[in-house]
Every structure is written in C-alpha cells, then in structure tokens.
Length: 413
Image 1 (cartoon, rainbow, N blue to C red):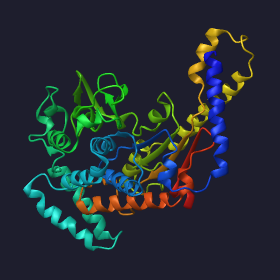
Image 2 (image 1 turned 90 degrees about the horizontal axis):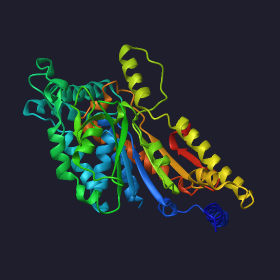
Image 3 (image 1 turned 90 degrees about the vertical axis):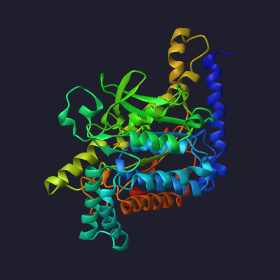
Image 4 (image 1 turned 180 degrees about the horizontal axis):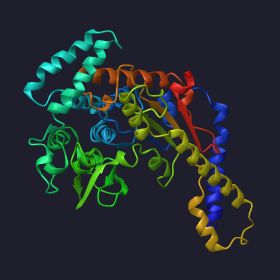
C-alpha cells in the first residue's frame, strides 16, 4: 500500500473511532475524559509573583486525578513546570508549596518588619485601601531586599561597572534560585521518566527565541534559569556558550509550540495565563504601566488558536481531498511534499486567566508577600475547580473541529 493510501486508511479508522464516540458521549468525569487523549499538556505563562495562581490550578487538577505528561512554561511558568516535571506526582504539590513558601520570605533580616506588616493582610477583608498598601509594601520589599531562595540585590549596583559582567548588567543575583532549583527539582527524573519539559528563552546575541525541550536534549538548571532571566533585573544565563534572557521578551506563552509540535497527537491543553489581554482603560500613569504589562505579556490566545484551527482544518480537508485522487494520478514527489501536512488530530484547550484584584497595580508581578501568594494560589484553585465542574470542557472533540477552546471566565460573561 502506498504511503498516501496507508495514511488515508489510518485517517478513515480514526474518523470511524470518532463516529462511534458520540453514541456513548455521556459527561464523564474530567479525569476519565483526559484519558482519551494521547497527550495532556500543562502550559504555563510567565508573570513573576502571579505564578502562585498556576500552583492553585495544578493542585485542583491533581485533586481531580488529572496528571499531565507534558509541562511547558516560560519564566516563572518554566520554574513551576520544572518543579512539576522534576518530582513524582505524589510530591508535586508539596514541592510547589515548599518553593513558594521559600521565595515569599525576605532575603535579609532587615526585611522581616516589612513581612510582619504585610502579614496583617491575612486578617483584612479583600480589596480594602489597607490591603492595597500592604500589597505595595511587599513589592517594595522585594525590590529593596530581594526574596529568599530567589534573588538578592547587587551591592554596589550595576552602575558601578561597565565590563559586561553579570554585576554590570543586572540589579540582582539569581544564584539563590539555582540552589533552590537544585534542591527541589530532580533533573535526572526529567530526563529519564518520560515526562516532557519545554521551557522558552531568548538568545541575547541573536534575538532569536528557542525552546529547550527534554524530548530533544538534557535539561539542566541553567535552561530553567535562562527562561526566567528577565533583564535588567536578572543577568543573562549562558547555556552551551550562548547567553539567554527571559523567553517572555519574545513569546510569553508556549501554547503554539505545543500545538505545532510533531508528531501531532490528540491533545488536552490546560493553559494557565497570568496576564489578561482585556482590561479597562487606564486613568492614571500607574494604570498605564499596568495595562502595558498586561498587553505585552498576554498570550492573545484567541488569535493564535484561530490561526492554528484554520491550519488544522486545512490539513483535514487536504487529507479528504487526496483520498479522492485515483491511485497513480498524483506525482510521487508531490505526494511526498503533501504527506507532512496530512493530519486529523484534535486539540482541546481549557484556558484559565488570572483576574487581577482591584487593589493590584503595576507591581503585581513582583509583590511576593506570603499573604498575596496565598491569595493568588486560592484564586487558581477556585478557577480550576469551577472549570472541572464543566465536564463537557474536557471531552475529546469530534474529528474535523481541529482546535476548540473553553474558558470559564468567558462562559460566565
């Protein structure tokens, strides 16, 4: 049988499977529905202190019995992804808590009074002026003193140097983060047990973006550090002789990478974003700074998925068209050119986006106070629980749809 005919037969079998599904298409539990996919991927956006939201999302997934086999992230999303991929499933939530409890503590003893004040927010009702002030205090403490197990200020500051060194090109030292990753992440596990990790970074010298992917190479702490090396706060990280900055400078969400990776498979994508492309018009300069970040780092998922869905429908249509071409009438070289474009896989995206609180401002991505972290975590847990309460979100789509997207926030208006 020719390659084209064999591919057509496989597609007919796949469509036959799909046609048999609707008859038994009851609303199964999300974990059972997830088992129908060839791949379950967790996609984590960058966003600094907001990353605790992703941990709450994962904790709710874990409680529901959903175990992703592919973790893809950028910046803080890459760090969370590495912790998840680098630990046994039964230890993942514990390790996430250990990481965030560590980095939400002050880097120096002088900062403890600030933390004590910020802790008052645990006793306050949400969205009060005092909550906003204490949230800002946590952000100021991070800038002035750094965060334990994450980064510490450089003294003297980089203005005192001009030699191109890390001391001359960044305000903070991230050596503590490297030590934290080495303590909490089993990199041998990432590279050996079949769980996939992909993290995005930007080459400083060329401006090119790339993913470090455990499916192609051995992942080390340097790869994760590079994905989160946001300038000018943090220094570039050298990986295999090349300097890298934060992947969010070019692409803050690994969604397209996951959807376009080959070989394509039926995939349930759990996408967790920390910045919303939609938002109110700014009223102050500080509002402008916050809105600028929201727009710059948001994923604009609808635009991306619409384009990918169109390509996937085209692949499906091309396969159907070629099935109608009589044997021998299609030149072999043309058939070989078209073969990589034939695909009838489906992708289901369950999309969650952090909704900033009314008192959060442009510093929300570096407000590392413990109380703020717990609030973000609880928000992620709640949003995922509400998504899980919609079992239809997790059902395998019918063939020919290409890409479908579900969003609990859009659903409720």
